Structures are given as C-alpha cells and as structure tokens.
Image (tube, rainbow, N blue to C red; front, side, top):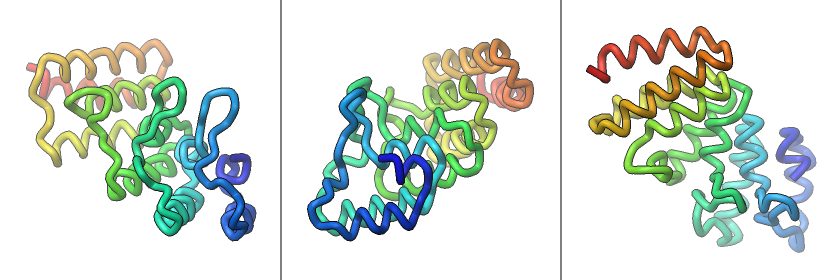
Length: 173
C-alpha cells in the first residue's frame, strides 16, 4: 500500500515479484487497495503495474470494487489532489473498464467530487467525458453540476467555478 501511495515503482515492482504478496490486499481501517492509493495520489506507473499484475494473476475481477466506504479507484482519482496526474490514472481506469457512471446513471457526480477537491484537470476530464458519451440530460445532472459550483465556491476554487459556470450556461438551461 505504501509503495503504491508514494509511487515508488521500484518497491511496487519488487513486491509484485514476490509470489506470496497479496496484490489486492485491503487495509484494516478502510479496506483500501493499493490501486485505490495509487489512484488518489495520481501515480500512473504504479496503477499500470498493479493492473497488469492483477490481470496476470487473475485477480482483477472488478476494477470498480469499492473500499468499505463504497469508494472505488476511479472515485479516488476524482478526489485526488494532483490534477493532471489524477487525470492520467482516471483515463487508464476508464480504458480498463472502470465505470464513470457507477454513482448514478451519469458522470456528473464525479464532476462534483473533483470540484469539491479542487482538481481542475479532473473537472475538465469529466466534462470531456460527458461530451464524449453524451450522458448529460437529466435534472439530476444539472443538480450535480450546480452542487459542484457551490462546493468549488465554498472551497475557493475560483478556476473551477468559472469553468463549471460556463459549462452550466451551455448545458443547464
């Protein structure tokens, strides 16, 4: 867990070479996996190595598997503080089958999480994903975007407020 959280590729690789290491082990406290730690801290290479090892060992049953609080690796990436680094991990997870609509039938809740965390790069990514998938249509989507604006304002993430307000002017009317 520590190696993945710190992005220490040499340590991750060394641990993965050990056949008895449980690569999807969960922490005692929250049931968090090494992949979730790597996602939160935006360590793309560690996430790539873990996913590859999971596949090789037949362990990657569900890339969306949550911790005990119900948070998946993709949601950890959305909440992470490292901007473009979190975006890289999110893109990898989605490419590997993670479902951005796991919180509801749309991506908008992830916009809200990233706005709250002040992660501009992730907010941009989710807006691009919404445009790419065409999954913005409901009043629930509009509510999540407006909630994201409120959270970004409260947390003084002015750049995110600006981008979400512009997006909302186009989509929330």
